[in-house]
Image (cartoon, rainbow over all chains, first blue to last red; front, side, top):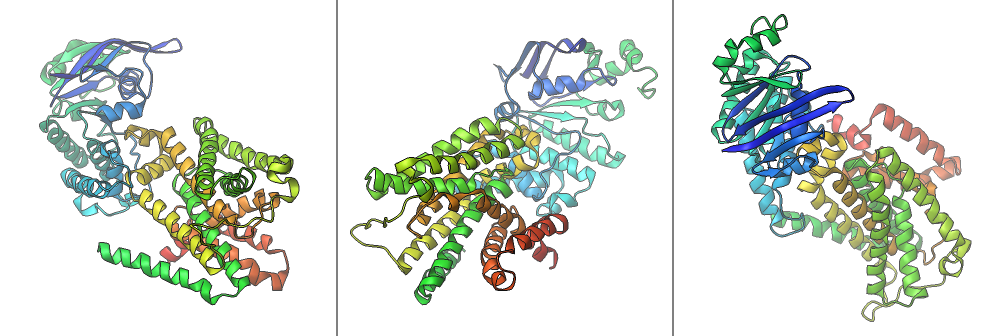
Length: 250
Length: 306
């Protein structure tokens, strides 16, 4: 079932068309890669879905309901969580507290009610499981300042998962990571999809994305130029042309 | 575990409540005002240190609480519980009126709007005619009996002890909940906070309104300490002193607020025999030192020395 449906989405910045009449779907448990050369409109598309930018035209439906025009916090509350390309931890908090902030929308009792303590400890237990899941178990009580860049990326993922998303948006999750760290992230992302969560991945690095994605949408100058399984994308002449000279490895 | 925590609260309450019975009238007055400063510093720390809102209105809300309870009781003849509730409502309404427009803008505008409110409050007090008593304020009133009992002397000090502990309990509960974490997240990184589903503007408005109402309640309690309210008490000088207390003690930590308030309130008593009324100079040096050398204040100094 399609959890996210993007239809005829367009966004212009002044005279520049960043996204042009773009349509695609993401299904439950699927890893969809959105790729393209620099300036292809990947980040803009990401920001339109997350609510950081507002679209000029088109429709964004999540779980059957339109989410275009909602504020970022409203979109998160509906079950679309995101990570940041440049890690944005909450400083001065521990790893566990950061993940608990990610669970913000899961709290329903006011802090003075009798059920609040019960809810807090249940959420803490769930947050601890997620920290285990991404492999930061040893650092649960550590201040976030102590994490390496790669560990910070894992924290971003645990924090986003704490919101119990149905769709998780990744903004270049392998950027700035070593090969070993990138492989670790890829394994975690596979584990997330295996839980039935839809994953939309913006990526620039084909070597990271192609082995990971179930399906790939290729953008160039804001428009979709190819869509299909990674093996087909790898051999697509239009994709080769768009990337030629920029990514010889593709 | 739970019993141990309850026991700690009881022991602290008993110690703080027993103290006034051993103090003379003068020291009892010093003690009461120290407790009130601590209550104010605790709630201001939640607003400034934990929520990261640079507001200069906190002391004005203390004044609004004090004036409104006196006006409701003695100008409008309301019974005490009604006057207290009406006072809280006034503080809440004014806090919402200030917070809703200014939190939509950048933090700088909150500083300006709250500074304007603090100044406007003093103007209203001075120009308020018979209602506020003008420049000389309102005098010659006494706390009405509560259930037929007159609360005075050390017994009234116990009321203030209850106020401080209740303020602390409320703030501690908030700080350790999803709401406290949301406040810190909004302070540190509003964009990431929004991505976590936190309504940034709403979180700021709630924190501002709640802490301002707490300042108002402290002000209501203050109104029967000196049994007079007048404009100079609630001026900007004290608003800045409150800011200094939180910065020097260590913004963002409850212990910092208690230490900062205690130090800066008691320091003039120790310094004035030595340097007269120039203690403001010492405060200024302390604030600069805190910002340059130890931005986490005295609490940070103690923590990093371990």
